[in-house]
View 1 (cartoon, rainbow, N blue to C red):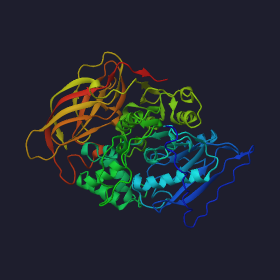
View 2 (cartoon, one colour; view 1 turned 30 degrees about the vertical axis):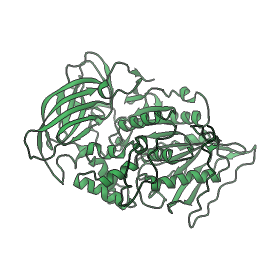
View 3 (cartoon, rainbow, N blue to C red; view 1 turned 30 degrees about the horizontal axis):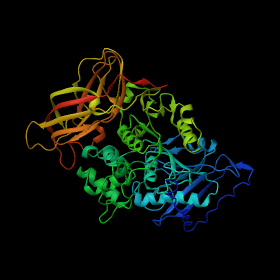
View 4 (cartoon, one colour; view 1 turned 90 degrees about the vertical axis):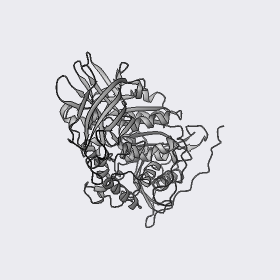
Length: 563
């Protein structure tokens, strides 16, 4: 019944030691001024300093109320403190969307995360017990201190009067959105717009039990020594030790699995039981309750090899269960924009600026975000449709080209291909795949888009050679470039160990032309896993194997070209 979730107003966290926060006076009713920008420093429930910057609406009028949009930076980044600054999404500067929101008369709060910027404490990768409590304190401060926040009923209708918040940000700046959604018992978030963010950190960093060394090393171990160009000296000792040990020992330990599992959207989506928060004797403070109803505009990069399309699709499916309006967009941009992990195929087949594209078809992310908030924070009916945000998933093929699909094709819904017994060598021939041709060339143009699936048996040709680790992808041979296999979207699926393996492969999207061919590509070693394949410091092995089974590829007949 309405009103059954009413909670007493929060108390604002106190000013941090050494700071006296000053809030500009609200204009008198009927008068307006240009919105101010000011920074606030508070002490949080975990006794660490939290720093954030408040951007008042561009035209700030007394007697009016305004929704607030929270913004967070990518890993290693810090908050935005001026409208002329750019937002750090993936470790590099990209066009900021704060200025657009302020111009559209939204208030924005840009926040530092624990251990980064001016925040205190150590980095624990969106730990609900730490980053979670700190970020919630920002919302509490705003609710307690800002009299001009817009209020309304929560999405579930259980509380008729809570402040209206939205969220933006990419990568780490998307992770905090999922975390706040799941932790805030007041359900103050009405709409979120996360970009290139994970569902399950264990899947992203250690897929199928295989350490994704190229990304893991850059994000954590190299950062500890400054090797990535950004100092992560404030990383929590458990985090630094666990990840370095994982890479050097080529293992995903139980403690590390708990740590990243609890810090993931999947913990709440799947009701996962987690024993610890990584450290001995620690416990999760928040139970794995399902996410509340939310209006979510989820955007992911199809060529992103850190947080893949599978992450976005998992979050999309999760939030749909809550009954909110949930949309799924993709583009070519992502962590691949850094080119820290090479994407050689993009240089062979696409324009040089392909990895900077932030549109699904012609729809730009920033334009879509403002329209999304217009509809779900300001209550402007039809704003999302007017901006061209599709109700169907939008899968980006390349810059300016995307398809809309009624649903994402996964698993056995794809076209089945038999994989005859094929010899491959784990730990051999880096970046040179064994190609298993999947049949005759296409006779007409088509689309391959969705999540392939493979059910394979891997059998070593002799005993005692060690543990095989192989990497699988879908390859396309363009009729215009015979003899060259394009690893679609640079996406790989690792498989560790001998025996039967039934797994979804990483999502892809591509057009095929008449004369093109597809193949299952089998890599013995690959740059994305350059230290943690079969050749690794802990237990190096070169293992000839046979691979056989079946693969299902999402070859579509119902895709519609996006506007």
